[in-house]
Amino acid sequence: MEKDKPFLLLMNDGKTRPMDSRALDFLNRFEAKTTVVDAKDFGLANYVSKEVIDYFNPILISGVLRVYAEQLAIARKHPLTKRRYMWKLEY
Image (cartoon, rainbow, N blue to C red):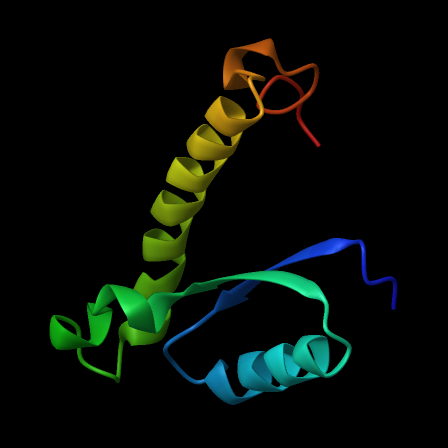
């Protein structure tokens, strides 16, 4: 693993959390530059039962990623409106 490559880890607060935790442990073992977006940090479990939380995690994380992208664009002085491909072409 290359230490200078950044990783963005999206952690679920449902059934896949153990797998997400394993991925985080792996990244930490190699001292990777990791940014973690953890659904648990946003308190979703306080409002949604654990039986259905897996359906709501992607909605929450999608909103967080949008704000993250906007803030990254500001920090790098590269507005989202100036993207060549992002949100302009179908994949």
